Image (cartoon, rainbow, N blue to C red; front, side):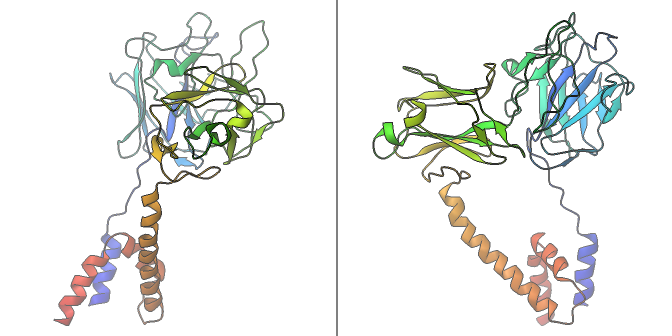
Length: 372
């Protein structure tokens, strides 16, 4: 009887679907004006802001006024792009579309929303009063600057150009501006962020202050000519020397002894810029806390008492909780082993699934009732 109850729980227990996080996938570029061949040749490009592949099945990209609704399908690779072309695959003939859609974008502006299969808002671009960037005359597109910054921020968009097929030696396909009669500008990789700063260390500030960068990409990025500068007081700009690289999914630590940048204790900020002076990331802080770093944890900046140079930022209470979590895992392993050695038809994997789904509490009550 008990085995039958467990079997029914496994069969009918509703599966848990994990929702995507905000800005996991973003609206990266919009050709709301079409191209030089036709104003109908509109396209939209999405960007996967994470390192893992994302399944877009049952996601939707819609305009708030219901003038546009695109039912997405397919997968977008980590740090990769997803191209949506209007009407047919001839809109951008050099590149195969990931999805074809109908209906058009209003040249006066749209409020676009990207939602996952559960209807959770993942990204939005509110241009209901007019597009933030792009040029209808030159057919230059509207391009997002930083995938980690809200799409509703007008300053996070710039007028660029047309979709190109060139792929750099390292990294994902690049989309850059092309103006007729001129050479296309150099394109720089995104995905490098300011991750942690230590403005008020123990000991002399001049020797112990540091700035940490993190490369979110699955490929190395050449930082030659990139710049980082502070924003308050006697500001200083540090230019990264030639052949400076940051490895894939790795950190880069820059000490004040090298950068000569003074991180003011009464409040300051930093801008990270590409060689073309495009600001790719920035951070500001108020009065500092002695011997605490200001770090990014799940896209939120916090003062952290546990310094983690060249490592992922972690709050102290997370480390304390990890011990309790490990004890729970040990209980699961022990229970799984006991079932494996018994005559139960259940596999250890199914038992773990039951435990992780919270069914264990129910089972304990059923077993107790049998013993009574």
